[in-house]
Every structure is written in C-alpha cells, then in structure tokens.
Length: 159
Ligand code: MG
Image 1 (cartoon, rainbow, N blue to C red):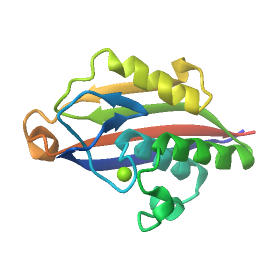
Image 2: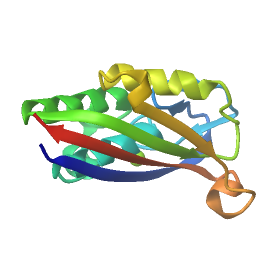
Image 3: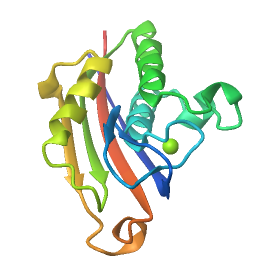
Image 4: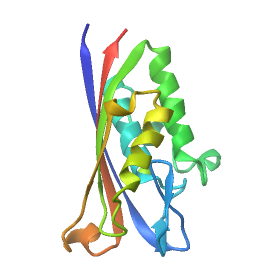
C-alpha cells in the first residue's frame, strides 16, 4: 500500500465588509477575507493538499475564479467535492495537518471547532485532523493585518 502526500498554501487579503470564514467556521472580526468565493483560506489550502496528494492539479484548475458558479461559493462544499473526487479514485484520506497564520483575531478555543468542521467534511476521525495557529509577529502582510495565510499537508492511501 503506497502513501501519497500533498501540500497546500493559500493567502487572502483582509477587507472590511467581508465575512471571516476559516475552515467553515465564521469568526467575529471587523474585517473578513476578500476573494471570488467565500475566501476560506484554510479550506483552499486543504483542497490543494488533497489535490496535490492525489496528483490532480490545483484548486484554480478545478474551481477557476473566472467562473461565476464559484462566486461567493461555500469553500467547504468545494472541499467536499474534492473529497468525492478522491473517493471515486479509490484514495483514502489518512490525516490532514494545517497551520493558520493570522495576527487577529486569535483563534484560541475556536481551533477545536475548525478541526471538527474539517473532520466532518473529510469524514475523518477528529484525531486525524490537526489545526495549528501562528501569527506574523508584527512583520509581513500577516503581521500588518493585511491578510491571512494557511498551509496544509495531507496524506492518502490507495485502497
Ligand atoms: Mg484561495
């Protein structure tokens, strides 16, 4: 049985008047993430990790931001769609690990909610999903509060 590994990275700009949705969980903040879809930066990073492990390209190929179908899309539904693509190929998700890089708000206890949200969509035991939080330490676009980044790693088994 071979193990497949993929990485994902994404970043989105913070803007007033947008919702801040991370891993399908909406957070209270004066700004939210700008993008064609709901701009769920973590869902996008996890999608790219899954597609990477499966050798299926990247999120832009599957859900182009020029396509009106994906305007304001719920990115967790896109993640569920990608899970279905893997499942159809006989690929079984083993674990997902991710890091959210964000200055404010601090995630604290919401990390557990975000983990559970990802685990439910990916039909994984919550122990196989890990969500970490980091900050920009006041430097770079994250540190200046201009945006949020997310990284993810996923491993798969061929059934
Ligand atoms: Mg994105």
